[in-house]
Image 1 (tube, rainbow, N blue to C red):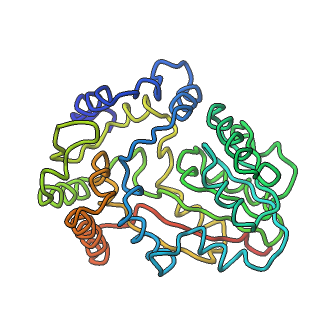
Image 2: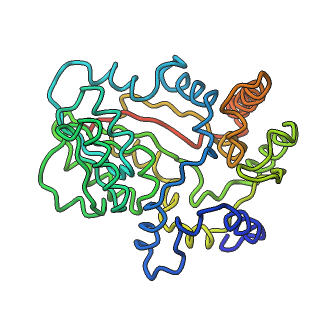
Amino acid sequence: MIISLHDPLVIREKLLHAGVLKRINPFALSGKARVRARWNQPDETIRHWYQVPAVISRLNRRISGDPKVNFHDFVCRDYLSDGKKRRALALGCGSGHRELDWARRGVFDEILGLDLAPDRIARANDRAAEQNLSSIVRFEVTDVHALQARAEKFDVVLFEHSLHHLSDVKGVLTRIKTILAPDGLLVVDEFIGPRRFQWTRKQLALADGLMLGIPARYRRFVNSTRTKNRNLRAGALLMWLNDPSEAIESDVILREICDQFDILSRHEYGGTIAQLLFQDIAHHFVVDDGENVSWANRILDAEEQLIANGLLTHDYAAFVCRTPKS
């Protein structure tokens, strides 16, 4: 699919969202320039599934078995609690909030975060200084595809919702194996679903059916009086214009990780329905009003059941991996 019949609706939604033109530049001459423009201006509006407390608790349980133990907690507890000195490399670090969380935990002596967006890197370094963490974590503007130029080794390489923005996933992971120290760990938390967010017809139909059961008051778009009545699939052309890096090879991530690394821990955690349903209406489910959390949990229960019955697969997964012994 190159152009979707829904694209005019998607474009309209984007143009009605205040500040969107600051975040995209579809007329930039290169794909890299469009990616930089897209990610230099973060959108902190509550609009995504992973911002919903009920979702956070459910994802924690799917990964660690405990709704109060998140992925970082799990990795620290099971893999980084031996007190060893470690250097970490975080690829696609954005504004650095995940790296700063790692730094506060005291499991790394050094963390280097790399990202293509200069404004985000500047904010990340400012935050590290403000939180007195600059001695542990630093951030640099670097194209992750230039990793082959780096000679130093790292004990842990982190991909957290960034690997799906990279092309040549196979080549990137091959280079990661040369960067990891012996017995080093690859830690991944990623979108592994359809390339370019080209949701399947079954996925959209099931999401739409569940959505229409939710009271209309919980389906009003963020910063709008309009109501969300269906889930749209943007055309691949629009996805490319908006952000050429978005889910560019997401559909091969699971295969390549399994082919190239020894998997120490693998936890798939859905998102196939929840990501679509909560998009742009997540703000209704943040503060418990006595009913909205119940609806959020119904959505999550339904997704789990659909996956358990084989009608859907997972679109997200978290891994801890090691380079195979030669």
